[in-house]
Image (cartoon, rainbow, N blue to C red; front, top):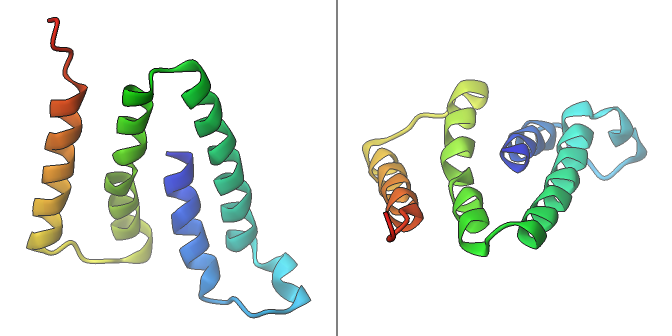
Length: 102
């Protein structure tokens, strides 16, 4: 979830991006970068402590969060094919995440 928020902030910050020193005032870009790095460290720790299959499922579901956040904060439109794709991802995450011993 941290990386999903970071990706949206990076998108917002990229609207005003230019290769110049004044980017230290581009707060969405800076916060997005900090969150992305922080999220990566959290993910590395999760891979170390958790089961790979479980951690990877959580990571794979980030595309669902990014899409929902982009609708809310970027005003993007979710088309029917995107909805079908998101539902397919969700179904795959649920299916693969099922414990076969239950």
